[in-house]
Image (cartoon, rainbow, N blue to C red):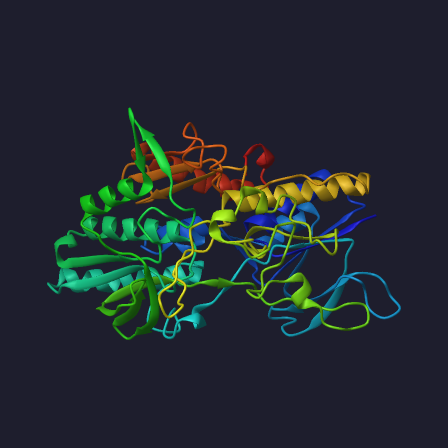
Length: 483
């Protein structure tokens, strides 16, 4: 009998749990530890954040799904990993702290044969003074945050209806943020809602980003074939922003968010301020801060985790110039190099380096997007690791399944509106996520790297919302829906 513990029930962790339970007999234990009682389809938080959907449309309780499948569920935080056991007992364990009302603060120790770290990120609002819902801006990172953002946006629209001009700022709240695609989608949705309300002429809408140029998205940008010519994602994005009258400020690191004002520095060293009436700014991420101890009780966290608190896996973390970074640097199996029964997937693993070229101001401030590791890639990693564990339960020497971001593709659909008759969407696909300039002149396969705009892509996003909620609820045939 094997016991697999999964820390986190986001896209990666939940996907891994479903596939493990589907493939393993009930003599094996599948255990999920997550601090929240509900699963959240995060891509649709964008629609919640403009009032196009309700929070109840994007979340559902985890316990009934796990009870139905025979998955052991603990509503708790992962705190400490002891991969060698403790003292005279060599059994690997992970210590958890319960977050549910009945057992809040209670600590327990769970033994494991395999451990998957799928904890996702800590939302590091503290990195920028005044950033976030407890400060002077709103967020769409959680369903609750998105609900608050919708209420704030609605109040801003009401002021415009009463004749007031309003300035709205959407974007990144720090120079090292990721998820530029989410900020891009949100600014498009805000623009859409302002037009639907008939108040667009009373709004100045800014997009504030740490990207060196529009369309970077933390992946170094893309090149598409449009007819008989090639177009960069920068050119494509600039045209979309011009059409909608959205003013873009790139190469920006937000230093502070004051009440009604953002102070930011740009790559040229200049410091500027921007007054606002509404601001949705995303935070940078760090790891959640798991600790690791060896059998003697000595802390070895820094051996398993990078300084940003994300877990090191089978990647090349050697420091080298940007020009020497290669696709092979990226992890394939997501195994810990020290403990082969320990994995990290999704945002929980430490990238070996950025995908976009890192740039700094003269005073050393880093202004460069961090690599995206959410959505489709997270699901693929979760499934690959789950299948590796299934194989190794049958044969301990089985090779690991591979799911490198340097070979996998990804799709991003940024849609406005949430119904079938209203809205449009920018749909982008890329293959591979990490560009390979030795294999492809533009870094990616032009036959599968595309950018399109229209209602059909919007229908696709709406369909994906329902399909992935269906899949996450493990309804009949869920496994036929790809990651």
